[in-house]
Image 1: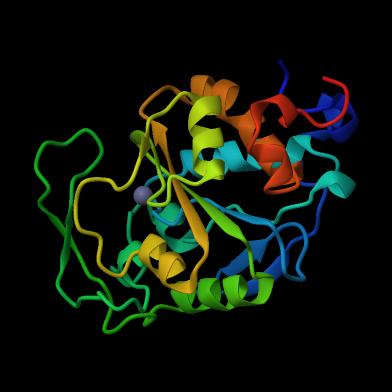
Image 2: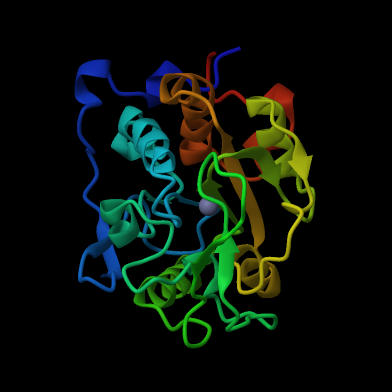
Length: 253
Ligand SMILES: [Zn+2]
């Protein structure tokens, strides 16, 4: 079964560029435009995010590939291709001020304690980053909060790598649907404490949050297996079209 109707897709020759003009929703610490593609008036159904961690830029490539394939008039759910552009440009997990943006949300459990992480393929969780001076101390965090408050999504899907799982504390219908489509396990958490995380913040706002951890596989394989599912999420009505597998295809398959 195909994930999407060809009526919703652009011919391949037009998929090299982004057909939609983005809205600038803020600026990074170094002044780079933070861009959101698609509908800009809430409430929207699903908000898609990539590259909150700058060393996970495959997430941007996969989400961009999906967005570029969809006809502009079929884009129903907005997408941020890069939450942390300074980090991507510098190849760092953190932003330009050394802060892990996924520990910088003003949650009840936010902590100033340093964050230790494991570099890709490395054994020890011994690289130290900051969580910011306080929750939402970073411009990227404040801009993202304002965007979510403006768009009022029912659900947010945030792409990370490379833990190869779908993290969804609610085990929501959307999380189950994604897990089934990309054949990754659905987990309630990633197995360690994440104070100040975006997931915890969304949870406190009553927003369904799915953390989609891409697998440590070659990019062509990830594009083949994950981009079609993302195309579906960009165009789908939620929850109607992403709950029941029998209704998961838009239009003629
Ligand atoms: Zn990440």
